[in-house]
Length: 131
Image 1 (tube, rainbow, N blue to C red):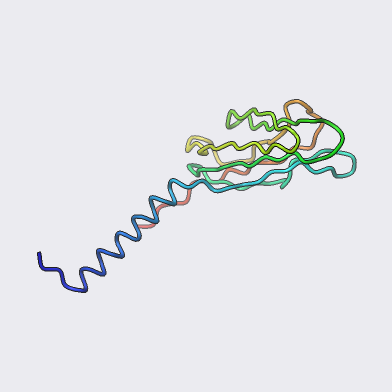
Image 2: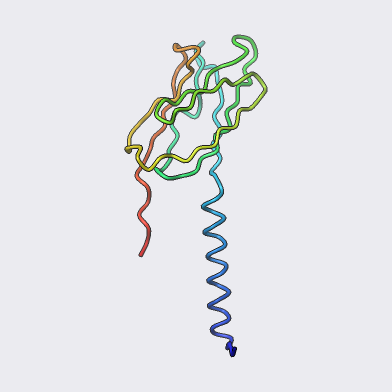
């Protein structure tokens, strides 16, 4: 085979792009949620989290509050997530946001302590592929 420099550059750039695309598709975006005490109420923070349908997410959920409950719930009914998060033991939950989940706002709460202030998962439509 005879490959000139121009074609070699095209092939190399194509392989780099393909490798980055595969790696990006396999890598989950990390989102950390933490319990915070604000005005005597426990909150999941941040209060809003934006995600896209089809996106891989790695939730890192932390409860490091001293006093009060030894554990809290991490509950997202729209994603069928219901976990217990123990104090000082981060919980890792990986999920792909279903393409079938309609854009909108969904509660993130504590199934054990319903009075705790909820956060909101904001699901956005998957970005359109560029042509």
